[in-house]
Length: 504
Ligand code: ADP
Ligand code: MG
Image 1 (cartoon, rainbow, N blue to C red):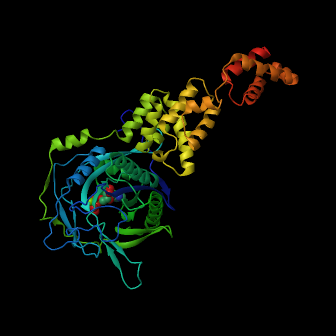
Image 2: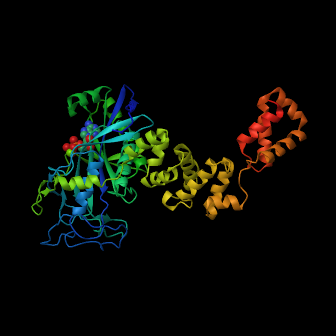
Image 3: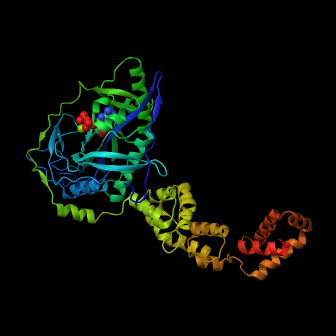
C-alpha cells in the first residue's frame, strides 16, 4: 500500500466487439537478470558485451563432472527483491531441472525452482495517475539460470552459439492475472523495474534483454473477473495466450491490444481460443502462433540432484531487510506528506532514485515546492533536451540550491534566476559570486526604483490617464520599469511604488 496515500482502482479497459463488450485479463511472467558480478552457479563474469564465449566456466559449458555451487549474493538479491514486493520469503526452497534440448543450453536442462520458489506471495502497487492505482498480486519469484544465445545471421551456412549468458541468474517474477489493460501492463513492468533499480537487484536494461516479459492475455465478459476474484475459480476467465519474450514497454502494449482484438474476433465468430504460445512481430504489429499446447514442451521437471535444498535463516533475511533503501512508494508518500508536493510532482521526482536524491539535496532547508519546480521544470527540462541524466548534470544540487537561496533572499528575481541557471549550466561557478560579479542583483533600493517609475510616468502622460481610469492598466508601468532595469527591480516593490505614484 502507498504508506500515506489512499487510492481507487482504475476502470478496466473495455473493448467493444461487433456483438458485445469485452474486458481484458493479463498476467505477466517477468524475467529480471539479477545484478551480480558472477553467475548463479559459477564464478564466471556476467559483463555485457564481452567477446563471445569468453565468460564461460566449466560448469556453464556443462563439462562432465562439474558441479554447480550456489552464489550467495544472487540469493540475497532475490530475497531483497521479494522484500521490496512485500512478499513472503521462503526459508526453504529447492532447485529443479527443467529439461529440454536446445543448442544454447549445453546442460540439456535449465536449473530453476518449480516446486519450491524462494519467494512467495507479494504485491505491486501500479500508479495509474494521481489517486489511482492498481494492486497487482505477485504469485511467486523463483531463481533460475539464463540460457545462451544462438546467432543465425552471421553466416549463410552456419549458426553460432555464444555461451556468455549461459548460467547468468534470473529472477522470474510471476504475477496473478490482475492486470486489466495494456497501459497497466506497461506501467506494471515499469514499476517492477523502478523498484528493482532502487534496490540495485536488476539494472532493468530492457534493450540488453536484462528485463523481459512473457505476457498472458485473455478476454472475458464484464463481471467475469469479479466472479474470479470472489471464487478464485480460473475457469470463469477466458482461455489465455502467452506472448513470449517482450522487451519493450511500447511493444507490450501494442501486442496486448492486438491479441485481445484477435481473440474477440474469433470468439464472436463462434470459434474458441486455443491456449498457445505466440510471438509478437513489431514490424507487422501482429502476434503469430509459435507453438500450441499440444506441441508444448514436456519439461520433465525433477529435483536437481546436484544441489541441496536451499535453506536460509530468518536472521539473514532480517539483515537484508535492515539494509534496504527507502522504496519509491514510501519516498513518494513522504514527499507528498512532509514537503507538501502534489502527487504528480512527487511521482516525477521519485521515478529514479538519483533524481529523488538530487531533489532532496536541493530541498534541504529550503521550500520544497520551489525546489520541486526548479528541479522538474528547469533542470529536468534542460537535461531532457540535451539527452543527459541527473548523474551527469552540469548544474549540481548545491548550485541549484544556491540559486533558490538568492531568490528566497530577494537578491534576484525569477527571471534573472533563469539567466543565472543558464550561466551555471554552460560555465559553472558559484551562484552568489556570479550574481555579485555580473551585477545581476535585484534592485531593492527604493529610491532607485522610484526614480525609474517617475521617469516612465513622466514620459507617458496618456497612459497615466488611462491607468487612472482603469487601475488594471497599472501593470503596463510595472512591465516598463522591469524592462528598464533589465529585470533586476524587485517586482513587489515596483508594484507598490507604481500604485502609489498613480494614486491608485
Ligand atoms: P501455468 O500453471 O500454466 O504456468 P499459471 O496459472 O501459473 O499457469 O499462470 C501463468 C501466468 O499466466 C501467470 O502470470 C498468470 O497470472 C497468467 N494467467 C493465468 N490465467 C490467465 C488468464 N485467464 N488470462 C490471462 N493471464 C492468465
Ligand atoms: Mg505456473
